[in-house]
Length: 599
Ligand code: ADP
Image 1 (tube, rainbow, N blue to C red):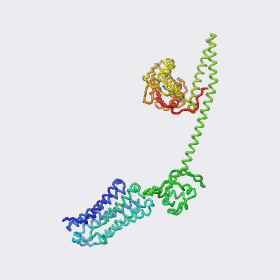
Image 2: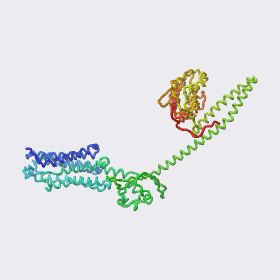
Image 3: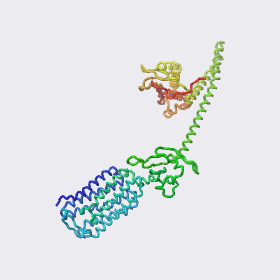
Image 4: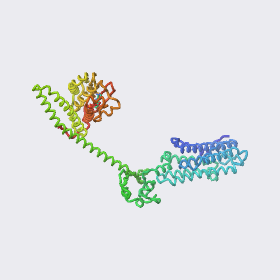
């Protein structure tokens, strides 16, 4: 009943080829085109397996059964092939669902015709078993009208698919030439094989080479598709993307002939006729010819002045190389960046104007502060001198008015000093003099200075400095100013509470000084504005504490120029912690060029 014949090697080879094609297409199985392709290859394997089994069977009943099972793929392969061609060429819309269902019905009809042949004999009028000279048992079956109808329908579908594929191959630009050739070969192979078999001209009689041809064609498709990543980006999809791109794309060959371009490039060339294959020098405007001449690689900004104004392009050139690495042409991508350039220029102008305004403001503040400070210092000096004089003459009753003048004057002087300081920092006109600073000495000095203020608010100050701390690299005068401000604020905004100054090594490269208090605290939404100049939290209650709202802005700037940072955490009603971080070694981040001069 079963026997071995070398004829089965051909269909078995088809199985292997189709399996190989399936393996290559498997990673893309989520794409509709790959799904149809996998279906096509599966059907091909079915066909070949049944064919191989049928060849190895020596009974008429076995052969008929196997050829009927094989007929499932005989009717499905042409339809799957047509679907694959439609998907691949992005023409699926050409086959409405109703037509697709009709085709499925038609093919199913042929399948039923084959299975019920015993009753009507319309497919194969006579089925006989013959022993051939090649040692093969074959079915000799003259063809009936249904068989011819089935073959005609199959050829019509394969023909439509082939036309679609060849059309796609012709439309593909030269960059896809190799892929296009594979397409044509893949499309013509099953066609040729089937013709050979049906006409009896096959070099291996009795063995249907059609599935082998489909498998071979499938392999050709997958190899071509892998090389060009066509399953990721089908040529038809590539056309759609490139065609819709607002960037102009021009591909030139080695002789500067246009081998590909998209509609955006056509618009730049003002090309009304087909320019493919023509020399760029003949069809492009002079400015473009000038710009692309001798440019092979890189990105350039080019300008073109026409009747409607100046257009700026971003021009990218890439040399195309063939597989051996030798140059095969050039690709140019032109992007219109006129609007972007205009916006960038407007932005630059606005930035310069803002910087100039800021400089002018700083210069004005600095000048005004200076001008105010000189007479104020004189007022304060003479008031104090007068006060001394009055005290010496025992005219105590007159000193209280002078005390008010002196207090107000000192307040005004602090305010002017702050403004002057901030203006200088803003204008980068502060030079700091970094040197190793021992924190414990500095902190103790600051705390001593502010002991009086702390007592006024009935606060206690505790200092903890980690032993053996290395010195920080900072300007001692400026660091003192920062700490005076922070501890001063802590005293100001705390009543009958505790202020803690804790200095420790936070990382290998940094020392941190935390100034914590148990005072009024700051609301979360105010924290982010705290370091902005002239900001005072909730003008109502804190107004009574006085101040300018410049202290923290100055502290932050100073910490930054010393290469450090300042941070704050706080909880309303529970207190705040201001932390200063300073480098142990290293240099200040932004040394300023203009020396500070106090005037
Ligand atoms: P001022 O000269 O007004 O104190 P600062 O810049 O030093 O200016 O502080 C800005 C504002 O931040 C203060 O007015 C106060 O509202 C808030 N603030 C600063 N330190 C504290 C603190 N330790 N506790 C509560 N609020 C504080």
